[in-house]
Length: 254
Image 1 (cartoon, rainbow, N blue to C red):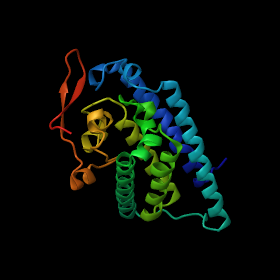
Image 2: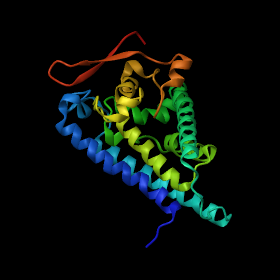
Image 3: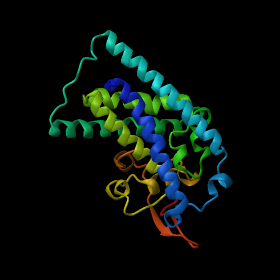
């Protein structure tokens, strides 16, 4: 049985999400020496239950898959869903980098907007920040409108502007999903390549989830460039916590 690239591009990233969320969840259970927060802090400090978070993410995935299928149907009706030829590796690399830049740019400015605008924060983005202590299952948790603005529209722009094929998008959005999970994992693992190669790692994003960092470190999921350029970067250090694990220390006042 063969599956079209359109079908696979709708299904594989959500599957990757739950597989890697499970892996990170298990790592967080056993690799306690790498945790940024002690066990139990999620239940103690967050104002939304894990059950509600998982239910919310499942709803987000249903919406994303439905939108994806509608877009695929439009492409098929327009005759634009013919078999695409994969470009050369250098072209693929350029497309991948362009997609990362587009996604980062879109997410930075929309993310910053929903923080600066009190109405948008209160009615939309506050749902995600009910997780003062981020954890992997809550990476995509938030208001459905936020999912539309940040993830669906941002992903569509990255796909269209980069010019990547549908098959390439399967790999790219699976990678972006894993990167977002890593940001919310709460596991500061030096030998993790996603954290060794990117300054935008779980420690960087953890600062944003803390109350003191709400107006800083908006960048996600790849680079921290826009925070550096526009002065919203909040410097921090990662230090060993008494009793085991790590903790974030802000290096200046908010």
